[in-house]
Amino acid sequence: MYRKLVFDGVLFSFILSVFVFSTILRMDEDSMNLTLLSIVTVSLFLVGMGSSYFLSRRRILTLGGVLFEPNSTASGVWYKSLWAWQLVLALLVAFVMAFVKTGFSFIELFDENGFAGAMRLFQGIADPNWNILPKAVYNIIETVFMAFLATALAIPPAFVLSFFCAQNIMKSPGARLIYIFLRTGLNITRSIEALIWAIIFSVWVGIGPFAGMLALMIHSIASLAKQFSEMVEASEEGPVEAITSTGASKLQIVWYAIVPQVLLPYISFIVYRWDINVRMATVIGLVGGGGIGTMLVQYQGQAMWREVGCIIAVIAVVVWALDQASAHIRDALK
Amino acid sequence: MSGSILQVHHLSKTFPNGVQALRDVSFEVMPGEFLVIIGLSGSGKSTLLRCLNRLQEPSSGQVFYQGQNIADLKSVSDIRRLRKKMGMIFQHFNLIARQNVLKNVMMGNLASKSGWQSVLGIFSEQEKQKALECLQLVGIADKAYLRADQLSGGQKQRVAIARALMQGPQILLADEPVSSLDPATCQVVMNYLKKINQELGITVIANLHFLSLVRQYATRVIALQEGQIVFSGSPQQIDQEWFEKIYGAGAADVS
Image (cartoon, rainbow over all chains, first blue to last red; front, side, top):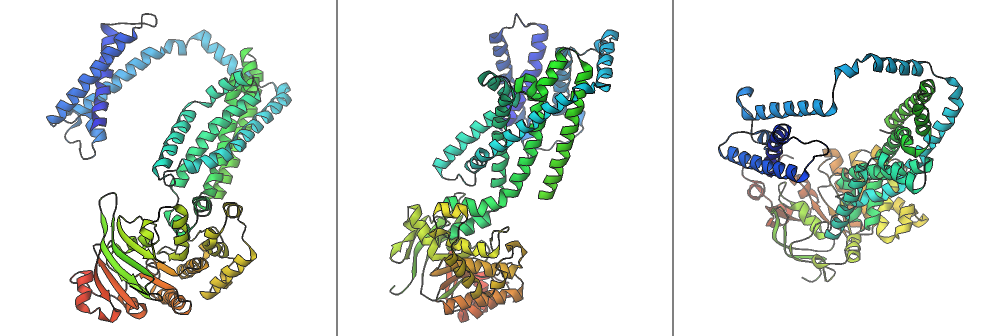
């Protein structure tokens, strides 16, 4: 019920505040009045919630109702129902806002000067300068090992954390508290992109592959721990019960009844994570994480497109090869 | 009272969702008995067995074993000591699929091992010998080095019995041990349970479905209906009238 009210409220306040702030109360970046904005939006939200409640009392189906109330079925012709118009209106407003905000313009897309520039870029990339190939290969080796070390160092902490983050193991009230604490911590860590971690570590340990490796490692720990713990939660209850009934300790139960069940999926996730990390490592290089990405951003800054073409070719080959290898290994592990 | 190995007094179990699985269940078990619990699915049989080795927490009542109220054990090590003395086998065998048979059997001895020994997977020569003996008792020693998931259902259940024997139990709890086996294999597994009951003197408490098996193997029967004991006596006493009372009117003995 409350999800439906919140949804309808958000939808209502979204549509109406867009109207209000693009007509009566126009603001730009400098005249932005956050207080006024929040007062108007929140009160519109409350009005929206109220009317949603009122409508549901009158048995009129709203979009929130269609989404969140499982036993409500949409019937009748769509253009005669309120929820359909809510959806159409909201999408329409969202598209108009998005086009305005992103400054979408066909004129710029097909502008003669800009188009010529893009053509120069593509010509450069299509005709790579192979003289820098040795340097590019040297740098991509750095990137691959950066990704390898980040993945390898992430395995032990993620392995240990995965059991403390699994609901079916952390059952007692005290354990529950640790579970919630760790889960929240991991969610926050994961929601901070590796790119941001790279910026943090490039200030901390200096620009270079070490910073990039640390960034990838932190992100990998959080991601692997989450994927691992989901495997633990999906493991069969039977063996756990059997090992428990022999009088085994908690550690022994986890080690003998759960670990054998999750080992193969773990390896599969690790191989995939390495694959992802190689791709992310090239991007992280752009913000000072070392490796091929740092090399790429240097040539790009000088508009040396033929050299950029060579680097892109090297990245493409390596990423493709690792992608294939990881797919084959994961297939064999099934 | 005197001489019994297990005394259950007014045992009740209510699950957090409000389902009352056991209501005021009381009975005694004599050493060396082959006690069979019958009843429809959902009558509380499985919950009853699990309350005996504390896989489930009893809501109220007492269970006396060796003069101790085990329904009241608080410390984890006490509960683990209790479980070691009660082996358990399950309907779906619950072996560790990717490990070999011998390792599966040796896992029965985990309660006597330290944390580090077991994490490193160190098992002594004596443990290995004992595991092989347990496998011999159920006639399956030749499969010791096969992976557990390569065995048939009946073979898996025999390995599970060997794992329980490895604990050196006084009581064996068998939760529908033959429910997922074909009739022929059923008899083989039941015969091994009878063997360890009679030759090793291990008390067996088993949940069973088929009355023909009950008449063949049980020394005593308890029937549960909606968590209450409705019958207690010898298997020969269960006639058509009792059968319909336990399983509902119109039920027919299929085997």
